[in-house]
Length: 201
Ligand SMILES: C[S@@+](CC[C@H](N)C(=O)[O-])C[C@H]1O[C@@H](n2cnc3c(N)ncnc32)[C@H](O)[C@@H]1O
Image (cartoon, rainbow, N blue to C red; front, side, top):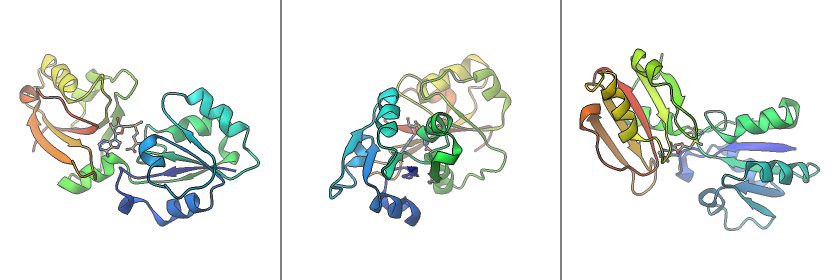
């Protein structure tokens, strides 16, 4: 059986009890280095997950008789590995344990109502900035190639330099920082982040 566990944004305090129970019962464990490091006592075989998705699929396939757990950041189905695993193995073979996404956490932390929010991502994909400027409230998962500075540049180019960016960096980790900036003022480099874009503060 394959279980995909939502780990939350980082702090173990935001892992659910169901997520912790699934890991405790796992025979083998796959996840990125940060997630695997959270279980130093795990004695079974592990798989270090990076961009090697094809290798992960083969590794999981070879272990289908075992209790396989894949650790996913945030929520597995919000621009996460869960979507890929569901598509590959089919819903009957995959149990998904939801997690607190980085977007949930950022909205909760700064009091942004999530109703009606448009969720999108620039993580390994082209973001649709024409649609983003049409939306009054957007939350974006980002990556190193398209983060706050690139988002701000695209907004300014579309006459939306007044929009507020709420940048949540290293959320729940010891170096968490949250910045409110108008798009026209965003310049710096940010570490791992999600961004909420608002018409008004
Ligand atoms: C592959 S996506 C996964 C999103 C995840 N499924 C979720 O629900 O949050 C990875 C991206 O999530 C965001 N992310 C994950 N953890 C984060 C954290 N602790 N702080 C800020 N952003 C985070 C970053 O944009 C990162 O590049």
